[in-house]
Image 1 (tube, one colour):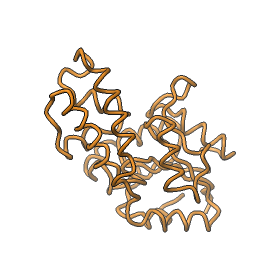
Image 2 (cartoon, rainbow, N blue to C red):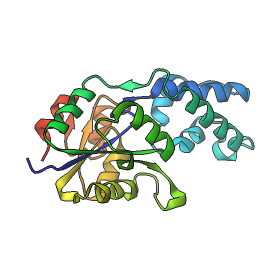
Image 3 (cartoon, rainbow, N blue to C red):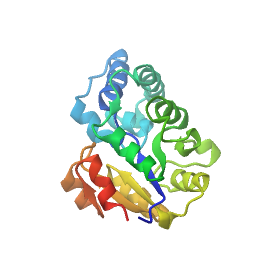
Image 4 (cartoon, helix red, strand yellow):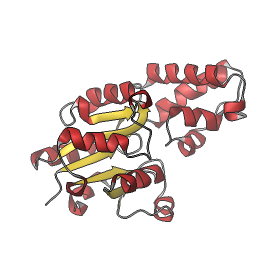
Length: 219
């Protein structure tokens, strides 16, 4: 096996965060007298960062005069609830144990704020992913959100591996595009926030339905 590193998306790939995201968003919407959204509506709105999620669920989006207040309220409420029901998908921890046994390095790439990514990585994956290999959005430091390759490339540099020795695992079209931009082989997962058909329509190279299948398809 030539793969030396696997970079994972976080939400919808490693962790099922949907209920806690919905809780934070809906509490914020309720505080501002707005209609709450269903879990399905939230699911279809995630993937491009928390601010874009809030923009998609708030009437008039960024044009809403209260948008910034709603966004910051939702962000704070989600942070308070981020560990309520969030948990790794079934099979993720055994998969990471196996990768570790095979001396394959791991990283996490997310559009969440960097501090939130590191908090979740410490809580759930401290045995597998070093904190400096868990990178979220920090545009103030030049790390743009996915699908820009910045976070993925910074992790490869931290791990001292090249793109052709690594692969990227994610559940969305944003992940497929991120992998392409970083010149990484992409493995798409069907247990997350997007369907198999959606992923195929958006150019999925390789698809897996269960975490344990990853070992079999690593290049």
